[in-house]
Structure formats: structure tokens, C-alpha cells
Length: 331
Image (cartoon, rainbow, N blue to C red; front, top):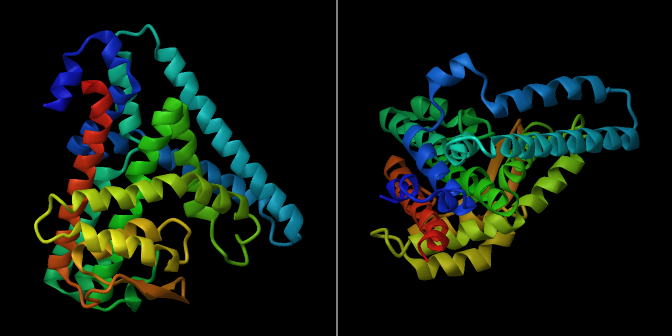
């Protein structure tokens, strides 16, 4: 219904960034990332990743000292983020005066929102885990960075649920936030930064110095969206049977800071409290053990049914986000 309202509204209303955002969310929810399209044309994030990989190989020499390595990484970060932002603003400017420009911009924005892709990926983990541990491990390997072979059944479920919470912030709320502030250029700049962080923002011997600027800037860019995401999970829990807003609020404020990330703990703790889960805890990344503390006072022994419960809360949080975006249009 909201999409129909946008499509039949006046040109002035359609050009409103809130209307463009709402249509972008609707397009992502309906179509996600169509495989037929991205078999013919590379996804923008894939192109960004290829550029990052090529420049990293050239600039991150194994014999470099720490300071020049950091400076080169900071230079790569600035180049990619500013370049993506300028490209986004240029495209948005070029669309002005084009018939249906708002719909085109919404379609472009939808390619940089990952709500449907996250849902589909996590749903496959639930389906795989229903069949068996190996199937669950294979599916969760596509949505998390940790070593799936180190996970038992409950570990697979927790990893999928934690990915749902964290990537709701990174893949949905943060793109919406930066588009609302700075339009298509802000969204493109954020996605470039998030891609950089996912590729070089690691504390390994190769990336600790080179990727430090990207990791710190990504933390800053996600600071507000992560907290908004936690609040959306709390609000959504009012509408989901079996979820509770009070425990979600208490868990978020008590446990979010226990996470090793300054941001990921906020949506994860809120989701854990809402559904009575315990998330976080020790895990393995690339062979390294990370001894994070637990968030939430609930069950650690989770399964496929719990993943589906988390997805229901995720869908409700997305709907609540769409409702918030619709308010300026309807008022």
C-alpha cells in the first residue's frame, strides 16, 4: 500500500528523500539482488571490492613499516569513500530532469540495501540446520566470518542470529541513515566504507595497520545506526508474539558494551533480551579464539526454530523502520 501511495503521489512528494527511501526498501524487500541481473552486470559492491583488492595488493607491501602501511591504508580509504560519494552525487545530479528520476534513484539505492539478502541467507541456515549439522555449517559459512567447522548446532544457530542482528544495522539501518542525511552520495560512500572494513578491517599482521583507518571510520559511521537498530528491535518486540520489550531494553543497556565491537552489541543484546537468548560468548575467527562475554540471560542452546523466531523479529523491525520513514510523507 505504501509503495502504491508513492507511485501515485505528485512529483514534488516523490522527489522527497523519504519517499525514495521507502520505495528503495520496498524494492529490496520484493526483489533483493536478482541473480539474472548480476550475472550480466556486476553488483556495485562487487565492483568496489575488486577495486579495493587490486589497490590493496599494490599498496600494502609486506616489507612496509607500520607508519607508511597505515598512511597507505588511510589513503585507500579516503580514495574509495570520497570516490564512491562523488559518484553517487554525480549520478543523482545527472538524473535531475529525467522523467521518473525518483524511481530510478530508488532502484539504485535498493541495490545498496541488503535486507532481503540477509533474510534469505539466514533462512537458509535454519533450513540447513533442520537437515543436519553439516548442512547448517555449510549455510552459515555464507553469512558469518567465523570458522563454521568450529561450531556445534547451537553455535551455528547463535552465529546466524547474531549475524541477523548485526547486519540489520550494517545492511539496512545504516544505509537508510546515510541516505537520509546525504542522499545517494552518502549511501554510496557508506557502502564503500563498509566494504573496506569487511575486507581490510582486521587485526591481523597484514591488515592491522593498513586497515586501521577503515575500521575506525566504519565504527564511527555505524555508531548511531547501531543504537537505532537496537531501539527498533525493542520497538518491534511489542508486535511479535513471544518477544518482550522490557527485557530487550534491559539487556541492551546492560550487555551491549560487553561486545568486542563498539556497535554490534547494541542490536545483538536487544535481540537476545527480546527473545530470551544468550548471544555472543567465545567464538573462532580465522583460527583465533575470541573470548567475548555473553549478552542476555536466556538460553545458549539454540536451534533452527530460534533462528526463525529471530527472523520474525527482524521482519517486524524492518516494518517498523519503514513506518518511521513513512511518517514524514504522511504528515
